[in-house]
Length: 287
Image 1 (cartoon, rainbow, N blue to C red):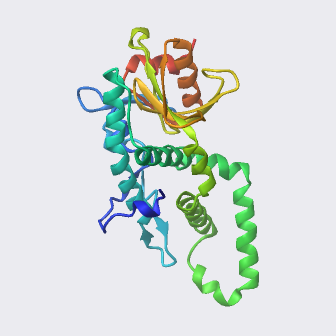
Image 2 (image 1 turned 90 degrees about the vertical axis):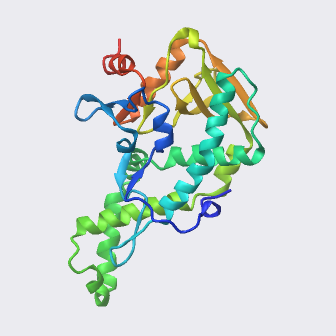
Image 3 (image 1 turned 60 degrees about the vertical axis):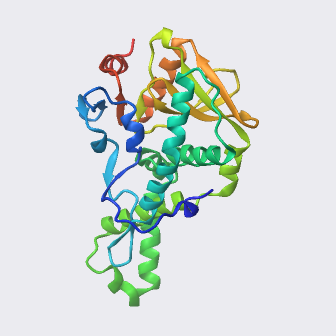
C-alpha cells in the first residue's frame, strides 16, 4: 500500500486542504455540527465548522516551474481518506458495542499508512524539522551557489524575490517528503499490533484533537513502551503497539493517562479541538 496505489480517477480537487481530515474532525462535533476549538496564538476559544478547521490553502499542491500548482498529493490523500474512513467507522462501532474489532490485513495496512501520514504531514511537524536541520540557511546557500554556477538561467528566477523562492522550495520539499517516504518505516508499522484505545466511560474523560494529532509518548501505559496515538473520536484512539500481529484493545481507566496525553498534544499544537468546552478550559489553565 502506498500513496501512488491510492491514485483515483481524475477529479477537481479543492483549493483548501485539510491536514487533519474533515471526517475525523466531525467525530468531535456537537449537536450543532461545530467543534469547540482553542486557537492558542490568539488566545481564543470558539465554535468552528469542521470544514474550516485544520485547513490551509493549497497545502498539498506542488509548485510547478511556471508557478501553477500540481494537486496530485491532495487527490491521493483524499482517496486514502475515503478508504480509511469506513474502517474507522467499523472500529468505533465495534469498540462502543463491546465487540472484538475484526478488520482484515488489507484494512490494517490502510490504517497503518493513514496514521503514519498523519504523523508526518502537519505544518507544525515540518516547521520543527525545518528549524532542527537549519533548512533556511542551507537553502539560501544553495540558491546563491546555483546563481553563481548558472548565470545563463537567471531568467528562470526573474521577478521572484528570494523569500518567495525559499517558500516554494521548502513547500515542494515537504510535498515530496510526504509522497516518497521510505518503505521500511511503514513495514515497521505492519510488524506491530494496532492498538485500539478506549476510555472507560465511567471515568468521564475525553481525548482532544490537535493540529499535531499524533503524539509519541513513552511509558504512558507500560514502562519502556512507546505509544503513538491518534484520537479518532473523543473516547477512542488508535496507534501502533508493540511487535505482534493483529490488534490489542486497551481500556483506559486512569484519568491521569488521558490528562498527560492531552497535555502533550496541547504542548505541540497551535490549535486544539475538543467535544467539550470544559475540557479545553481545563487545558488552558492546567492545575
